[in-house]
Length: 344
Image 1 (spheres, one colour):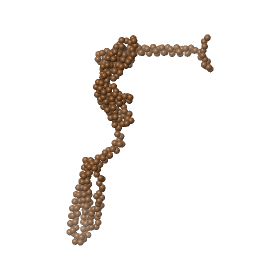
Image 2: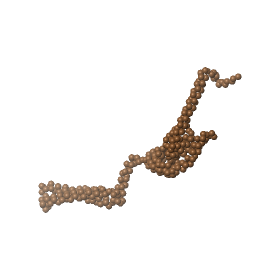
Image 3: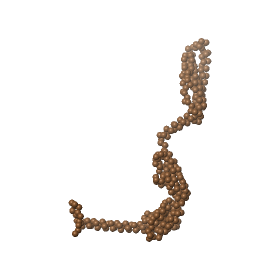
Image 4: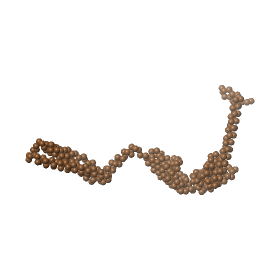
């Protein structure tokens, strides 16, 4: 008797011809895909074998640069310890010691069965010999970057980004010259070149400085100018300007004074002993008063300029000089005289 379990409320579905056909089609498709996969794998293995043989031949001839290209393609298609060993050996030969030694160590760690092909066993033994000679050649480089607090520093060696996990730690590096570049948001990038000898350990220091914004830079310039002026800069321009003003004032005062003397002489001969002058001389009197005012004012300005220039010369190079007080000049003219009243 055949016992059939039935879920409560759901009657058993009898097998149909369509269901059986679907199962059969699925099985046939799976078998076809599996066969195709095995065929593709076989083709890849055959291609890898051809590339590997050509690569080993190039390596034996001493042409590792071309051998690397063929051996790397062979490894990408199908891994074999013999191919990987020659690839690592050639990488070491062209100076890629870190990559080559890592590849050889993977060959050594790869477990081989008791019936492993002799070329695989020979490759492991050869890898050990090459490693013993190559490992002492690996250099160590430490990049020390000084940057603002909380700056996210990124380091690249020969254009290859350095993982954050190894920043500030010694990193196995191929001997030779390397370009190191450090960057951080908001900072000026820094770069340097470093030359490493076989087995050398070296530390390279870089400095990242914040990028100065336009605002603070423009506001600092006047501050620096004020400092240099307050500390007594070596420029004598203010004193020279003051002496020039003083000289011009004295010259104008002398010219105006000479004109006053000339007009006074004319008036003295035309007026009586009591100082009474004829009405026709009123224009000459008015002109004489104007020239007297010009002469007095010019002499005052000239004197103030000379005093200011002397004070500037005496205070330059020492402590900051007190701000000179502005000269105050007021002309005074009345019916009988012209003059100047001022404070300096």
